[in-house]
Length: 385
Image 1 (tube, rainbow, N blue to C red):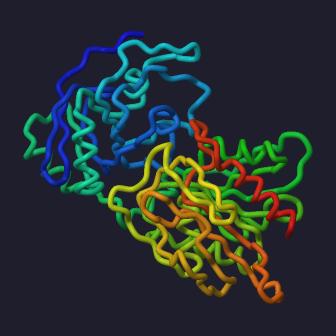
Image 2: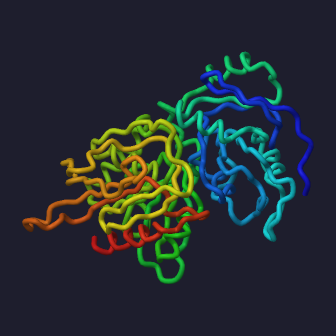
């Protein structure tokens, strides 16, 4: 279970700053967008979250890998990060569920990483300069030569990635106990805990590929679905068109909708709102979010580099009803949730809830679990309809 022998490794950022360390995981070379994640636990969920596709994740917690890797906690079929940066990897994992070391698992799946890096300095740099392209190599020792290849690599802005991480075939997750609802869930990079949490509430979940059409959605179940769900996922929401057309067609049919993360951004765009790239994004397990509908503050899990551009103090008229910002991030006032309501005709009464979404991860298996109630809110919405 001890760590394997390591070789020198080099990390170079798009702006020319470089760090030297030792190989961690596979040897070779990788490129992606450098982002930092603030979670002190749950690294196995982070690694297997498809939202991290094409991203090189810098862990701010200094000691990583101490619980090893197990067979119960993966959130998808593989590790998705493009690269991994840690300061002090555990030499020996210690956990009764551990089956192999983090180092060995990264190597087995071909994920190039680097250890021994001053991740505090790297994180402070990314906070000041913003997320940017990066390269990690165990082959190249010249920072200038690696920098040239970094600047030739692809950018996250304009990248349409959901089809690269989505399931190829539709599948069904059966409800636990008595069936209450049928939901069509679009897999844009879905994590395993999402259909699991819905099934625990009596929902039969039909997980569909990212390329699904409105006809595919309406064909779900014997009498069509009771609701539509859009998952988290990677990429730029402004580069996506097919899923927005699907969502608009569902809203025209008054189909209850719930979206998380990428599904929140696509919901905003379907309603005519814009999206923009955050300077360095929100990634970790400790973001404070205010739910304006209850007045409660939740500690939430995040993984996003884009956000919805919407006024936080007024409602916005759309062809499908009025949309309001339902959740805000208390660190930077970023939009964290949307609600779409249609008028009931009663003066002064809030309109009927038709659809809603949040920017964070209520399904985060690694915690926190403050926002699990949102799946109950989705059930209430379907029941009311």
